[in-house]
Length: 287
Image (tube, rainbow, N blue to C red):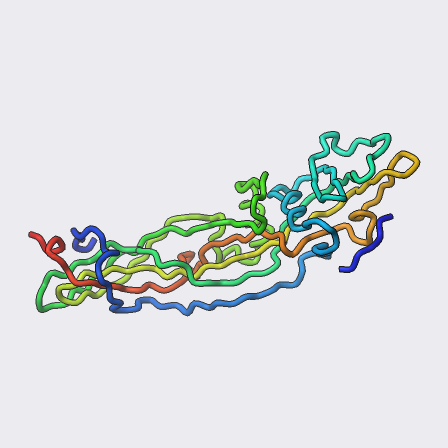
């Protein structure tokens, strides 16, 4: 046994609004944007093995858990931490080379922490031009956009990640608590009616300052069987990681971050609609 470890409106004819000076004229439909970090109770009894080996256990977990929840079979060089697929799917061996051990099991992807944050402003309306000299312009416009989903991982150079499968797995295993208030893996278009007011000789438009949520998952590997060679031949078998006292492992530096819009009760992105304007120019008011 191995030793234990501690451990619309009028169409705008101006082209580039981003190069013109802008001025905020109103905040419409403002919603409070909470920015918080919340840690949840562990979803499993997994043991964090970071620091228990001379090699990177973060890299180990990100090599084992690449999106699938199916059973997998592995060889590991316990001197270097290098793993490779066991193509025999765990068939008994006459002997195991010193330093090489084999194991089998499966991954799952529980939520470990979550927080909300303010995303980048995104234009959601066409500019509304007021060419008049003496009267303001107020008009109902359609704000349009789409929800966004992204997934990132913590270990640079990770290979073999099946992002399509991973997105589906995280939306269920890590994001179940937010099924109706988070748009991860459910990208869709949206449209809402709102009113914009533009002063004389100004061009105005709306942007959305969205509320976003990140759900972090530290993947867990569940050991079904672990084997190493006996000195006289044959192999020693156990159901724990390296013959220690635990059969579920994680490494706190190995994680996936799933990011997407927070949704309001109508299923639309939560956040602030902010109105900006700039002075009209000759191309805006050309007859």
